[in-house]
Length: 248
Image 1 (cartoon, rainbow, N blue to C red):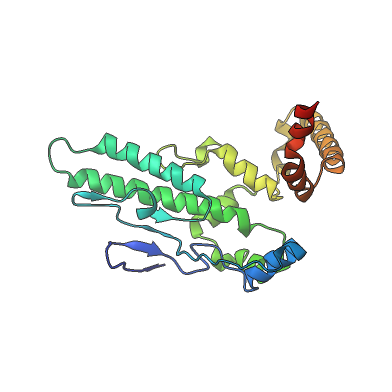
Image 2 (image 1 turned 60 degrees about the vertical axis):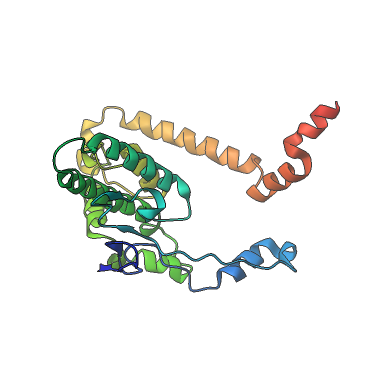
């Protein structure tokens, strides 16, 4: 990891590109998008947006507290950023030094926020590091052990023979529950070997039958639902069918 000083800030952390944030595909993103859009992209100008992902190691310094984008930025999906803003504001309210030395409040705030960022980084990385894809350098880079934080590798070792539970999360610093970890882990095809303790599961066969039914229904839905492009076109041209209903 390395520290990248900012002209107007203290301690903004950016780990090496293959550690903190996800590697940018070496293939030109514009080419990928134009290939997807096809003829619709002809004559359109591409606008490029670049950003540096990272977070501050020190968010509370003297009488200044960094909250929101001034504190850190992981990804262009703002849901995580909104949660961090709310959590930081709540933490400031609870730790506000109405009396005494405010430095002890600052140290606690900085410690909690730093741990929150690091744990959230593990959660985001999980979406990429256990993929089965290897068709582009982007995916191949993300599964390399050198790109996976030690803390996440430790979690994955635990979950080889047991699934994530409440003992794996700390409500004081984790913003994602064990259920969120499970959704991503098994949604990505991770296999937890429960064979050594299979005897303690009384309803093992019933569970297999239930999962088989879920797969059957999933296949039925996939076969009958429109593709994403078909749905978008239907929304654009038919307003999800509301125009015909209004006319009737």
